[in-house]
Length: 87
Image (cartoon, rainbow, N blue to C red; front, side):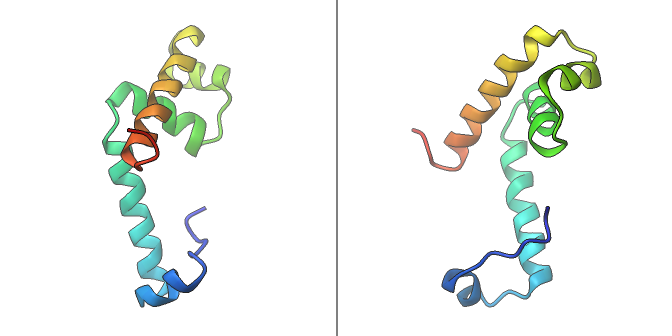
């Protein structure tokens, strides 16, 4: 849901209107997804953005179900590094 605006003093201090905040959030998420290899990105998009289960994601991508979980784990690891949560 891209419509949820950031809350708190930092959001107000930024001086951005709600539409600008929405576009800013979309750019940040796009940059994070672009940091992933394409095959991993598709799995992360399927599970995290589309809300698919692992089996559904495997069918959606026409891949073996065994390959989905490791790809998702790799994608989440890389996103954690991208966001500075892991070295």
